[in-house]
Length: 183
Image (cartoon, rainbow, N blue to C red; front, side, top):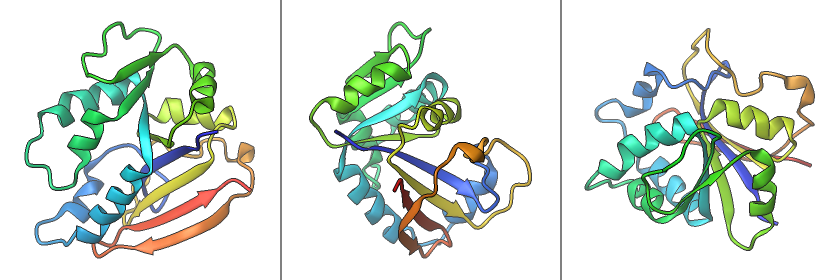
């Protein structure tokens, strides 16, 4: 069975809503080469990404238009299979995209041969994946910022089993990768 990995950018206080706090690591002169290298490794170990409709539409509106992207994200997203969970999307308008009607259809996808499936952003979907006990690993890129308010990754922490830390990796930008797996 393929692993389902949730990858999120997150603040110290657990907020994952996209906001201006990304600027901390993206400031001019900040060396991101180490972070880019790790992202490349993660992309190489996956052959599918999973989005909710809102995040998918945001990604579709941005990544296909990027040129000269040194991170490799543009090439990866354009070539890899993209699954979008939506009951309203009719035409994905992005090649290599498969529309899933719900989380239950993802179970069959996980049974197919292949590499990791990575979900990112898509807070409603991620909450549904957590509730359905489908997440094998969490890759949390923790930014050195306290947001105070916003939607959090673990909205219902009582449902999360104890996790096992498998990697801690600080980056030049001040971001720290924490990787956790289910026992």
